[in-house]
Figure (cartoon, rainbow over the protein chains, first blue to last red):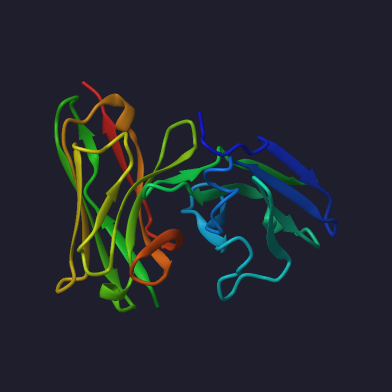
Length: 110
Length: 122
């Protein structure tokens, strides 16, 4: 059982926007601004696309954006493209030197 | 170009030990915290351990505390994970990862190694 809750699947058509959620608790997402999002294509290592809730690493398209409200963090992918089809994982610092992940969301581009 | 090249892993019997290594290049290794994250057969990611850039502080998930030891050699740009008392629950692909920000914050993993498979089975 993952510490953070993500819906197992999501989908959208090319060009559309889709928002993925990551629900934690007041002891992790709700209190720390250390939420990260990772994209993972089959057979590949995860890739960081958002860190510290809303910051994008160099090279990540601005189609990807992150936000947080209360105990829930969100990743929005705008202008969906075929290559965005992947698994997406969130993580959050949870205090006491502990880092927790969500179970992942499989994003399908229709 | 940043690179993290992993080695070690393989098949080990329950109760056995294994050592994973991660050789870094293309960046100043000593100024970044490093982590180990594993991906279970069901697909989920689990943070395992982290170490500050200097190596002065180490952190562990409760599931591996007392069994795993993370270390680094900044003179050789190498990260290691010594795994003892392994059980089937430790079966996973293990990734080493470089912190996105600085020497103490391991909360965002900015670059990942290629992963190495550890199978614990008799």
